[in-house]
Structure formats: C-alpha cells, structure tokens
Amino acid sequence: MATEALYRIDAYLRHCDARVTHVDADGIELDRTVFYPLGGGQAGDSGTLTLEDGTTLRVVDSRKSKRIGATPDDTLHVLAAADRECLERLGVGAAVRADIDWERRYRHMRFHTATHLLCAVVKELVDGCSITADYARLDFAMTALLEKSTVQSGLDDLITAAHEVSSEWVTDAEMVANPQLVKSMSVSPPMGFGRVRLLRVHDVDLQACGGTHVSNTREIGAMRVAKIEKKSARTRRVVLEFGT
Image (cartoon, rainbow, N blue to C red; front, side, top):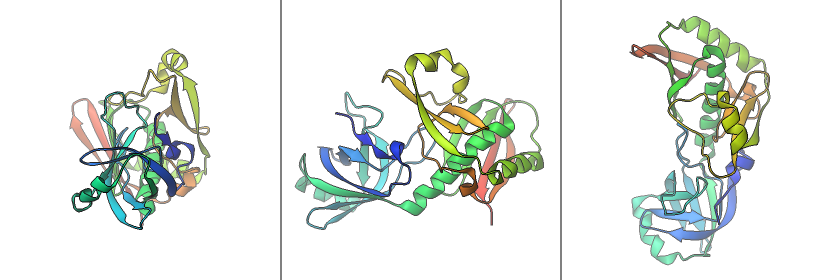
C-alpha cells in the first residue's frame, strides 16, 4: 500500500500520527506523511519523528523511496546520522508522530507558487527549476532578452491581485491529450498511476505539478527578481528572493 501523501490533500498540515511501514539504513517510511519528498525542483521537507517513548528523531531530508515497487508517494524520511542508531528499535507497525519544519516548508510553498506566476509572466517552456527556502530559480528555454523591470512588475501585479490557488486531477489519458499542461522540459509528471495532479492559479495558470503551494497569491508576499542571466544561447535564468 502506498504512503498516504497528506501534503497533497492539505499543504498546511504541520503534523500527523503514522505507523512505520519500512525501515532501511538511512531512514523510515510511513503509512501516511506530511513530509514532501524532493521532486519537481522543490526541496524535501525536514522536521522530526517522535516515538511512543518520547524519543525525537531528526529528519534532515525527505526523498522518494527507491524500493522496488515503490510509488511516487512513498517517502523515505532521512534521519540525521546521529539518530540512525535508533532505527534498530523500530519495527513495522511502530507508532510515530511526524512534524515538519513549518517555517521552512511555508517558504517553499510561497516560492513554488511564485514560480507559477513567473511562468505566466514569461510564457516560455521551463528547462530547469530549483525551489529552496532561500531562493527559487527557473531556467526558460528562450533566446529573447528579458527586462528585469518588466518581469518584476508582472510578478507584483499577480501577487497583489490575490488570485486563488487550488489543485485538481486529470486522468493519464486526459494528460496525454492536453500536452500544453506540461510546461517543463526537464521534469515530467508521473504517469502510469491513473491520474495526474494539476495546480491552478485561477485566471492565471494551469499546469501539471505535485508540489506544495499557498492557497492565494497574496500569501506569497514581497518577492524580488534578484537577477536574470543568460545561462546559454538558448536559456535565460530568473532567480527570485523574498523582498523586504
């Protein structure tokens, strides 16, 4: 049974109770989790797992499980090296409480939503993406020059317009029939599992995306186009940082 990815249902969930389903040398898999695993350019969550006896284990990263037969939702909670000795005490079925580092996750959510707005401003295919707690960047497949002031103005307008943000699902067949829903050349949506998640910024953008986002663009807050650079003859990189 695949891990229940609670972050896809509600990105604002900060913790959950869960049961251990698998243990390996690096970390733990659970039957349900609020931890988003590295993917789609977005960094994996960090936080803690608390055992029934009160022991707290530090989760330094979250990655998609590489077990044979694992699904995209099966998440390995990677423990700090000093805490891995506790893995010997954990068996399948053990109860834990999972808590994410909410401040870090919320920064990811704000940045990730901002990159969708950036796609609406620039309107070119994306050929690389990185979303961290400190910055976000998109590489656009294009040769034309980008004016920093124009991009900044467009981004500001969409943030302050307070567009609602929501997710929806389409079948694999619908995804194949609507290739315009994929705006990334470097990351493909997971296919073969029956359905694909879309992220809709109402009246602005709709594209395949499995990441975590805020529910309204106004939550993004002040966002600064830190720099625009030419990465190659066919690529322009836009880097975003939080404004003051």
